[in-house]
Length: 143
Image (tube, rainbow, N blue to C red; front, side, top):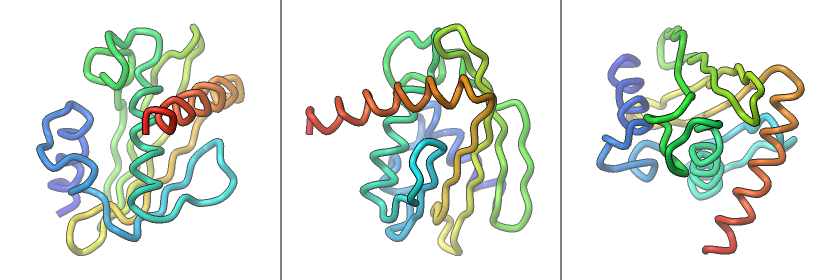
């Protein structure tokens, strides 16, 4: 089952998952950001942060905002067990190498119930923090 669920995530990243985040996220999902201390609870907040991340993680090579397919972002390793997956990724932001992992847990219905993002090195965390803050402000302004 985890392989099917991760395929849904990869399809979503490529813009080829019809239901989008609304269908993939559980109502009670918890999102852990690398730049925010408190967990973000609930579908609306998790969706906001994941959309901002999608618009940020494309890095230097993104053709357009939110387009991870045509960008420097790519998953380089994948480990799955039970209903958990760890996906290692890399990208470039402001000329700096960014390396991180998405730790994803799916519930019994095949929806994401927990999403945790970890980033390295520290320069990447600082760049990400700045970009995410700007993106979240922009998204909130546009309503």
